Image (tube, helix red, strand yellow):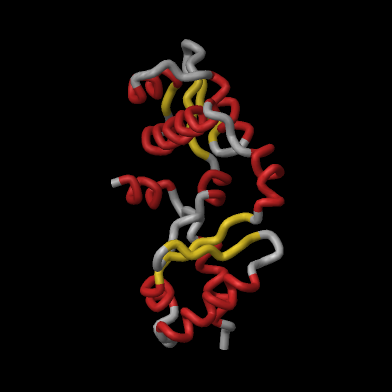
Length: 165
């Protein structure tokens, strides 16, 4: 039998900061009751972890990194520019996956913005896209790779297309 506190810790950590309530824990562990879950949560709040604390807000719980580690985390937090670049990267990857083989100009037309060539380079560096064809007028056509499927847990590009519908 799995330790109830271990399951609760796993649920809190995997919730990525989303607060969970007792009912959430009961849904995940239907063999447990409110009293056993509340008791385990109270123990976890007292014990904490070596790098995190279990926090209660009203009837909700979440994990928070201990304050002594915040400075380290700040050093790697993304800047305000990076989220925009990530969004453009994901949008570009989605267009390529759905429309492959596709050119830079087709991507720009679909996204209605000029595509920074560094995004294509980044996607190639990650191994998610490649040039699948060069046309007579030297236009590069891009498509996804096997690594794209593997990294995103897909068995085929058709599975990706079904997710997007």
